[in-house]
Structures are given as C-alpha cells and as structure tokens.
Length: 291
Image (cartoon, rainbow, N blue to C red):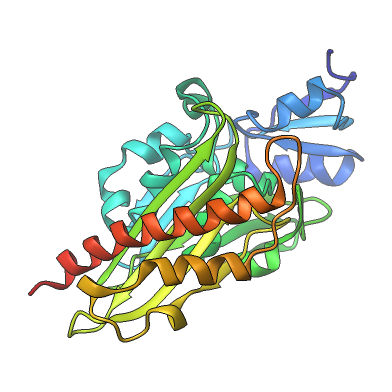
C-alpha cells in the first residue's frame, strides 16, 4: 500500500516546527521515520501534515558527562552505538542499540524517535525506564522535562498532546559498583523481539548484592521496571542465586500472547533471560567493585 496523501513541512528552526504543529491540524513530527513510515504505508496512521525536523539545528548532538548521557532528537542509532564515551557512562545504551533492527534501520532511525513512538517492543523505551531517564519536550509555552513514568501511557501512545517536539532524551549514568547486560530473543535476527531483558546489578562495598532491577521488551503494554532485589539481597556476588531472581521476575510480569508467542512462552523467556543477563551484569559489577 501507499500512504494517504499528506502535506510536507520543512522547518529550519524549532520555533518554525512548533508553529506548523500548532496551526496544522493532524500534523506529526518526522525525524528518522523508521517507525512512522511503515505505519503510513500500511495506512495505520494518516497525518494531514508531516513536519520534517531534520534541518532544525542543534538536535544532532550526544552529550556525555559524569551525570549521564543526553541524546538529541536527530541522533541516529548507529551514532549512539559507536559513541564510546556514551557507552562508558551508560553501557546499556550501546548494548541495547546493538539489538535495534538491522544496520539499514540503525543508519537512519533515531533513538529519540524510537522512544517517542512508544512501542513496547522497542529496545530504547525499556532502557529509558531502566535507567530512570527522561525526555525534553519543546512546546509553544517552553521546554519541559518529562520522566519516563509520565511519558508512556499505552502502546504507541504517550502523554504528549498538542504541538510538541521531543528534542532529547537523557539517561543517567550507571551507578558505582554496578554492571549491566541486555539480551533478547527474536524469530529472526533484526525482527522485533519475542522477549528482551535489560538488567542492572549493584553491589555494596563488600561485593554483596545490594540492588537488582530489570526491564523487558515485548512484555506488557508499557515499559516497566521490576525490582528483583528480594530474591538475592545480601548474597555474595559469586554465589548469588540468579535463578531465584528469574523465578521472581516470572511472577511480576504480565505478558500478552500473540501470533509470535503465547503469554506462557514469554513468561518462560523472562525467567531465562533474566537469569542469563543478571549473571553477566553481576560479573561486570564485581569487576567494577574490585577485590
């Protein structure tokens, strides 16, 4: 199929983009387009106007500091994947981005666009949640920061309404004595994940498990962070019972079934991926903590 007819706007500033969004009813922002264009082609979305922000200056920057990583709205997945400084500050960014679709999609798609699309099958929505991140939203009234808990309200639905442009996403730095891991299972490499898991393990100064958190891909209608600490709290990192954490994770999730996988199969994968990723994240946390 071909998209329904639409008008095309090519603003050269953020103010101009917001003006078009405010005056053109049914307008939608276009950045990388790798999530939006398939919906247009299948006529699952039919905006009256596409507002292409690719010529708006200042939206293509990655800023990594000791506090975290700020990713501009026009940063392509591949740039974030290759940014070694960003990966050092928050390793989950590169680890999750490596699982996003295919190289052709990563070359054009944007990290912020993926988040704004609010697909529960998207890797970066789960990473924003797991890291406790937020987005910056420009409106005619000014710029506001929206935390991940307030952003996602349903599948492919955010809390943002009216003229608004998500200009950046911010991911806090990995805490001290912590490690991360990310893994997913798909029917074919590059397909949407049947299930994915991102985890963070934090140790105390004595190398005992202090905190364990996980977020999942394709499990639930919106991103959620699950605290698995109770299953392994206080255990020495070398002897921690990650299988128990996986078992706890299975009781906390509420996946849906579809033509790709049943709810029970997804719940099983949650346990398996949780156990595997926690073991890897714990090893990294132990290395970062030292002897």
